[in-house]
Length: 410
Image (tube, rainbow, N blue to C red; front, side, top):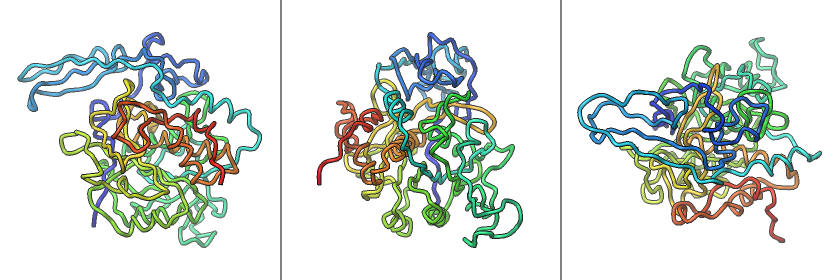
């Protein structure tokens, strides 16, 4: 049995969940006006980036040279001592390039003014999600055909009490493990997609009014592993229960024919993480060294690489001129975690940016098919020299441009 490992928890800051502490506004990414009702909006550089963010990386020159970490300058991890141990260290500084963001503001302006936005269900097949989180509790899909907690399969779909979705890893209706860090990854993904806007905390791309997250837990344990069989079952559940877009922030080096067939034959749009490199953490070309489902060559898949705020791919991000489709901010992303907020990094954090954009656009344009949404996102990608030959679109996500994309005449 092949197992998937989620793509990003081992790549986050300090290899752990990092809870945000206050930071002076003048040294943040300068986005405090983007979503003023959200406490941590100023840290969401992926939504808007004015070029003021700086990252200081302190690294050992030797593999056994003690600990190493990445720390945003003057940010939540500033003031940490230089690692101790044998060897010496190098200090690298990365400065943000203004405008390396997903250009969400004009899309929000159009979306908020529209009176025809349709409801959209997004399946998050991942670890569980904190459905009680104040930024997510209004964003969670519920199964109206089920009466929660009565021990009866009210809607006859084969799942008892699946009111909030289903846990395919443990085979029960509990989609969140209270008091455990096991569901950090899925909670972070869900927040990027659909955390409520202007209600404190972070700003999700779609907000919570028209887009709902269907929580389908298929990865478990602290390592975030799962089987293709559970993912396949989750995909079938998602489609049968009204989901139209599916976020898959995990990968495997092992090919599953059943999973490939299930994705190819699905009517849903899948947004997939490209993966976070080889055993050394160095990004690989997934055209030559495929990873799955990222390398599946299907028209209903968008594979996402991780873009740093200076306009270059993160060194750990996988890429591929054919297999990867678009690059998106995925490093030092702040979002919801169980009981709070935290930074995580990786292609797992980049994928939900596209998922959120796709759901927002699909809601805004009820005349669009999911194929139209995919074409709009890739066809409007902002071209960047640093991405030529790295992703098939040659660019990064631009949600504002996607909202203005014109569908070619038949």
